[in-house]
Image 1 (cartoon, one colour):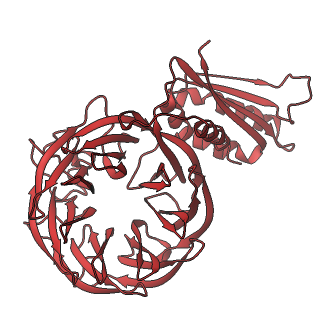
Image 2 (tube, rainbow, N blue to C red; image 1 turned 60 degrees about the vertical axis):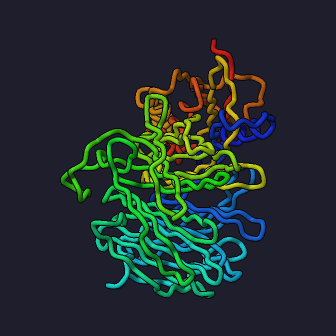
Image 3 (cartoon, one colour; image 1 turned 30 degrees about the vertical axis):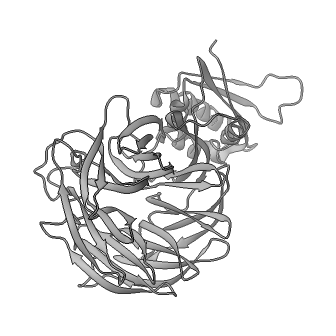
Length: 508
């Protein structure tokens, strides 16, 4: 039984019944739902709308978990898909329609292959193609995929890491199979060693692709032609003045009015051992930041603005940047972080300047597993973690921030133990619950007691635990904390029933 699930229903109901005036300057992610995954963790997430239905694909070591998604952020499990060699992980995933057929393309990182799946009417998957790495391609340790739609055909661009870095283009056939068009090996000029982020802009009839090089600390721009071939335009490396590209990681972009921007985050190499995974160990740590590049008339990248991390932001170890919403004047972006374990919202104005908004400490590190999705006028985020103990996917609504005032949050857990549970097991469960305060300092207070009601309306529930949190961050950290997950796994087998309620109240 999942003890930590039920309180989310109450939260979602409360949020759905409140109406706010929209303001992009004061928005916040609010947890709506979470579900378990069958894979060992969640490495990456994508989503797709098919015939009015919305689906989420969460990939990790071993396979892909498939969920339907509604506008309230509720996830419903509908299936799983095994990966080639039962390994993966599904590091890069992208879905799209090719000649009227919907496909999901998966970069099987350790399988050194690209898997093509047809998306069936109910959102489940059927493998139609497996494209293996060769001496002429760069699919080894495949990580990132980008679909580029041209006038007469569509192409899949693929970036990899470690063994044979470079950029490759494949034509997507109507049946989902891939035909190799061109590969460009990484060299000292371009930044394609460890392409963990890619983005495409279409500007005045021309198509441009932008890549980040994780290992070689820079970004590159490419012109893509109608036949799927491409050529390098310009390349920009890291420095300590007007860009933060040491370990260039997520890459995205947006068009605001007449201006085209590319936004690049980085997971700085300081988070890795200098004598280990990182190839170029001669780097200087100059902080964390999100870099904005403006696109000139030739499609080239031009350094434009940097939002630097400080004590008021959560930008350490950026692994994913998603566009939450955009108008002609501004865009709201969500930055997922591995080291700050947070979702930081930021705003990009039409002049290409970033402004930090609110952040939510999720309680779990995000490792490429963040996806924005819109259903009607509802902006959602789907997130997962690479933590092997968590095995969860969570959804959030991006809403105007709720003014809590001086209120605190009460988290009430009512339990009923199975009849066969021994007194020793129950006593141990109580002790473990009490000890959460030692492992999770975000718990302001915890108390418990055995039911003493004489009204006969307790539904057989016998033990009540009351936890107090001071804000939304504290609850998130508690819900997904390793100690809480361990508690759920430990006492779950002896729990017969559980009722969880959360409410905000004045402190007493």
